[in-house]
Length: 140
Image (cartoon, rainbow, N blue to C red; front, top):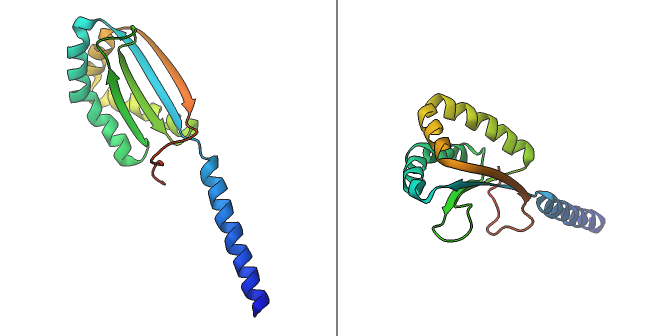
């Protein structure tokens, strides 16, 4: 009986340790999409984005295809003044999200998407793995 308890105890420790290692191995992907927008167009872009594009992105979070997303802008700083960030489980998950995003935008907000792109003078993307995140992303 004591031998069985020892085996169970060691097994629980190994399961717990494996779970911690698996959680630490998950490195979510952060994608930052930066745009240069004329300052005179920033208000129009933000209004359009918040009214037409944000509800679609919120749906992806609700569906579990994205952990989160956000829009950050500035009136003072460098020329990359309109930025959107997306956090996905990994690159594969982001690619699936992006394909579906482009599809939904085309179906639901084709004119808004074209107008939004018209405000963008220049665009760039950066992709990062997130090593530490607090709070941790939801388990899906």
